[in-house]
Length: 257
Image 1 (spheres, rainbow, N blue to C red):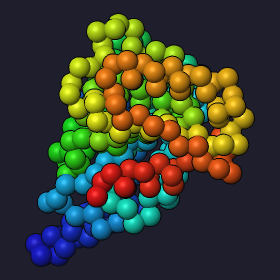
Image 2 (image 1 turned 135 degrees about the vertical axis):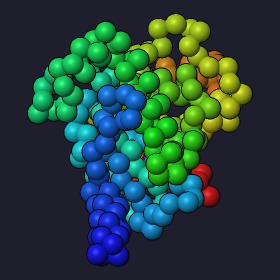
Image 3 (image 1 turned 120 degrees about the vertical axis):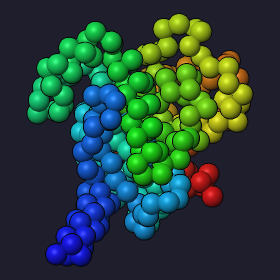
C-alpha cells in the first residue's frame, strides 16, 4: 500500500508539472497577496537554474491570455513564464471580480500602499518564490505591452540589477512609479543592461508614426541621461498593435546563451 501511495503521489506531481507547462497555473506569492500565472518550460526538471521571462499585461488586463500567448510563442525555449496580475496598468476594472481575482481586503491594502508599491513589492516576492520553488534565475527578462511598460520602466530604472534585459513593446511612459529623481538607480549594472523597445511598423496607435511613440523617446532619453548605455529599438515590418511575443522571446533567447 505504501508503494502504491508513493506512486500515486509521484503521478500527481508529474501531472501537476505537465499542467503548469501546458496551461499557465494561477499562483499566489507566499508573503504577498499578488497573484500570477506560471508556466514551466518543456523538459523542466528541478535541480538546475532556469531563465525567467516576466510578461506584463496592457490596460486590457487579459492576464491569463497574455500568459498563454507567451507560452505558445515559447515553444521549446527553456523559459519559465511569469505573468503577474498587476495594478499599475490603468484603473479600469478595479475591484471587478470578473477581471481581478483580488479580494476586497486586498484592494483595501492596495489603496493603502499605492499601486506602485503593490506591484514592485509583489513582483519581488513572486520572483523570490519562483527562484526558491522552481530554480528560476535571480535576474529575469522583463517585457510589457502598452500600459504594461509602466512597470517595465519602473523596474528598469529602479532595479536594473534584478534584470537580464528589458523589452517594452509599444510601451507607455509617463513617469509612473518614478516620482522622485532619487529613485533612479546608480547600480553599475545599468550601463550594459540590454533595453530594447519593440514596435510594429504598421501600429498606427503606438508605432513610429504615432504621437504616443514620443513616450518611448522620453524614456529612452531618460535612460541615456541616467547612464544606461545599451538602449536600442526594433521596428518590426508587417506587424501592427500586438505584444510581439515571438520577436521578444527571440531577443531574450539571443541573450540567454
